Length: 414
Ligand code: BGC
Image 1 (cartoon, rainbow, N blue to C red):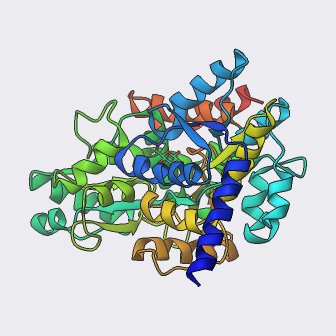
Image 2: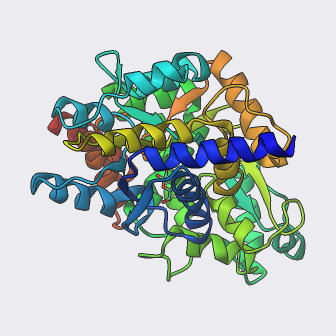
Image 3: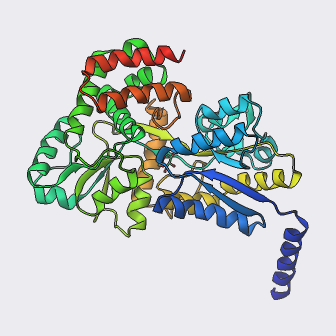
């Protein structure tokens, strides 16, 4: 037995030596505590396989800064080996002819079988795999500090009306009701969650996925803007410019009662050593139970002249969809595995609830792509919609003018 082990070890070492190792430069924006720990697992697995990881991280939530840097690097003819890109942008980049075709590694590893079709489709261009998905994040969460609610004598809300009642009590007790990060993408994240809650899944789809003008400029949308303004009135004056992870810290430090954010927030509670159910609670955002706004992180690989680099890209892609990585990464990142059939044993209660809602929402037509996180509409359209939301949030514009502005914004990108 020992001898066999030695032989296997020698063989795998030989294999590693005979394979030409390559450097993989990976562009990503995972720089917060929880994010960095999670992506570190991918780096570790890649290096174990014999290749080297050159970190190309660009700080800035939602990847806004990373995408700007990526464009300038690509225009100057020097794209990274791999880059975090998602949603319809994948097809936009593929159309430029700069992405590697990943069909071979997909076929060898059964991607069509291990990925839900709906998610696999996001990764394809003209039927070919050009991206590899990493995870599934749920957006419509509300992160709660239960002891603030207790001190304020407030109940955790399940509707926006209840939210207003609770927020008033929390404010009166001297706490900040909502930890907000005043950056356009964070404002849009809160807004789309409100649109889903106020309008329901069908309305969300009509408005923010299908871009139906009568839904965009409708009484329901006006109500969603009114609700956004009401929520803003419960944020603090230092919110402008604040990073999302600093807002999360306000919740676990006992300064703020709630944060509306996708479940990458859980990664921050975890690295801070906070206990779920004791120090923090994750609830569905008001009026969104049963619905699932999804956000899938993914990597594309840029075409390479060097054959060794192509081998390394395929290795990275294969590792990403392996069970080992799916567990190591997602248990830290706050997301859930994108592949089917990964054992649930190592996931916490929040992740299990996310998995269950993901499954049920798919059957009830309540599984919806996040607009704010680039999953639903082309990037330029998303940008135009986010501008309208931010402009409304930071001025005294009326809700009905904002709803009208949504239509003009969408038209301007057609
Ligand atoms: C990404 C997450 C990331 C978050 C904050 C989202 O758009 O999908 O992976 O943690 O932005 O940066």
